[in-house]
Amino acid sequence: YLINQSVINVGGMIMDNEVKELLENLGILRDMYDDVRIVNPLKKKVVSKKDGQIIETDYTCYDFWGTGEICMNCISMRAHNDDKTYIKIEREANNIFMVTAIPISIENVRYVVETMKNVTKNMFYIEKGNAQEIEIYELIKGMNKMAHTDALTEVYNRRFIDERLPVELIKTIQKNSKLSLIMADIDFFKKVNDNYGHLAGDHVLKAFAKRLNGCLRNSKDWVARYGGEEFLICLLDADISEAYKVAERMRCEVESMIIKYNDLNLKVTASFGVAATSENNNSYKGLLESADAKLYESKNSGRNKVSY
Image (cartoon, rainbow, N blue to C red):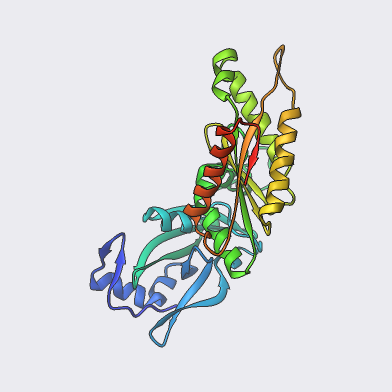
């Protein structure tokens, strides 16, 4: 996809003519890589330029991998957010690709140049069946999982929220659908750490995350650790009333839990705040702030409540 813009910025700096020509003639890059494209990572669309206009194609960036799903470890979204170049190793069928994501700015809109290089023959690993085999596919899967998973609770991490939630919001707006967020926080969690120790606190966090995860309606919804004892739940195709019901079920499930730790039987409660997209509130920041405000409404009115 050719870019013929006279001024293109990379990392906030105007590129010299040599680099501009490199982008304008992506055929040169394709001599070096197996695939080169420019994508809008927010919309997950490959873009092109036609009649002087940047246009979206019907091709999604993740179509390349043949999974039909958005990449969990999307380095193009990371490159977009951080304005930095990132590299990862990814699998496609029986091939291993090195992917580079380079942020660029075209007409004050940030896009990402993706280059894909098949490095299967350049990587050394022992064939499957050998007693000393190194299963490289599982290694890649594990590395990508670690990039977006909270090590303690094994739900998604804050990085996943920052990279995935903006995409979910755009998809929701495009479908004219609804998306709801639930912010959950363990009540008086500091007392658990102070009275029983941080290892007990970690045990409670893991049990809490597992119980929240078990209340999700389907495989599309997700829960992530927002920070400390605070968790974010994203419900797709859910309005405020549906989200309230899910949050209330979570509240009841947490309240009824008995968390066994060594010879202790620990009990906790949690407070919840619910927000949903609307005509006046469909931004990443706005929706998070709304859910957070409702959470603190619950905490300030006695805790162990759901506010929406």
